[in-house]
Image (cartoon, rainbow over all chains, first blue to last red; front, side, top):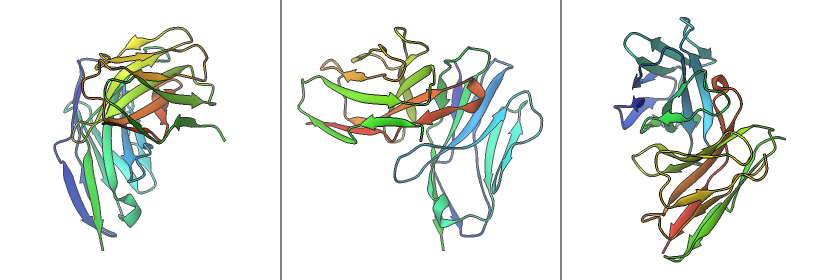
Length: 117
Length: 112
């Protein structure tokens, strides 16, 4: 079974600084997708960024980027120029590919990010 | 605007009562999911459905039931057999795997 591990329950960053959230996963599959979701205090889950395993290039979305190390099964999220609105729980998630329309997401336990002035 | 609507936002029930959580989507997504969220445990899959009139158990299906009579709707019933039902419940839907899920805003269920 696939597992996703987030070893940092809490992280803190100063406004305008950069922070990296860690995620490792375990799978025997070669085709899969990885995601980072943000859950602010409203508890709405928001997709931050996604990465296809077959792509070597790391995904980037504005201030958010990932460091995808397939051999090491590592998928970290870097947030640059941190803003107060980035404060939230961040979940790493894994999904198998080639499974038709329904394929479950396996989530890590989350990292709570605090942003300080 | 397209999206997923979960209702109600807060729900209180007495122990031993069944309760049904609503999830409706107008995204024309085939697949729908129910997750449970507890502090420190991330999200755990309860049930999912790929098409109408078909659904599969997830990792923690015991004490829950679902139906999928319409593409747009995927209600979750928390039965009296669920030993610890107090939690935050999230409904989601998806298109092909690489786009991830779209989530509803959740229902907080408290059983007293």
